[in-house]
Length: 423
Image (tube, rainbow, N blue to C red; front, side, top):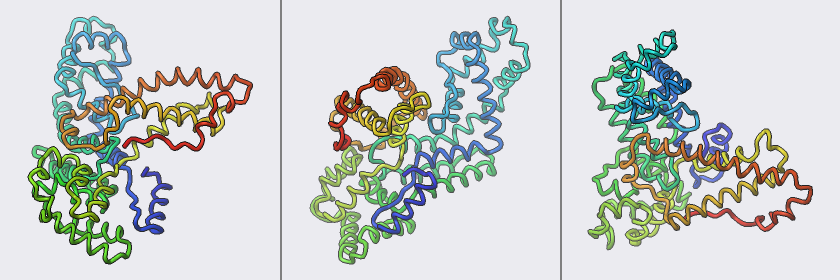
């Protein structure tokens, strides 16, 4: 659920009224807050400001940008506030060998020396930053720290079932940060405290349950710690909701699952890595000997961990109803959003059929740190440009037409239908 204060209060009220319902915070927003906390560290703030000076100086001067593009095989990433952790994506882009080499070649080129603005105070400040070795070593240090955190963000900022993966990825992140060498201990301790504070915001017993029920981690010699045991027991007590018989059965079936007892868990094909990558499908095939635990596992492992898909729908609302387009009634705005959302779903269904939205670790490991976030940013910008043109013509037609809009567009056919959904 979204992390707005009113939503958090509402979630807590729902949990008290219906204990079997779990309130979980948006992981993406929590990780974004973590990056904001890290960016507030004094030494990191200085590096980020210096990096922005370089990028803004080059991208806002067309002549300098043209020189840079002739000398660099990779373009600069421009600042943006629409994606999570974008400042650290900028640093990752800057430290790339193609961009780094292009910057240094540009500031010693004849074109730069002949440019009248090369002697200004701003230009000289940017040149001094680019050729300051300590700046680049700090950038690399920041990227080393942020690399495991970006992996968590890449997992969280997805549509699909990720509940069984987030706890393991978060614990791996903390281990990697703890084991880092060559970083000042006080600086590293500050980063670790930021990570612990934000991870405690979104990790709940439900996330722990997803971890202990995911066959991939069980097959890797998973050890149940005291914290995990408490999380698992909390989940089954709330799930049973006073039903002692169900709680006892779940404990017995969980023991059978852990010890690979029964007709299915010990089968060689149940231990194949490719099958364990898809936990919901795995439980549907191999969990029949523990039916009660299978039902719980499928419910938990089918959950998402982020409100990002909902925010994309909110973006559609803001795209349709703006300060200039404010004559539409709420009913018509809702119906336009309905049409837009379902058209996008139909397009996805045509592209990949009814594929289950299960996320695997292979998907995460194969991506570069910034690849998915930059791709989402480009897609969002292209989509907004295309939809602005289409919606402008549609809404202008709606506003100018004097007849009853419901009769013209037959919006009544839409009422009463539920939104399409992917399975």
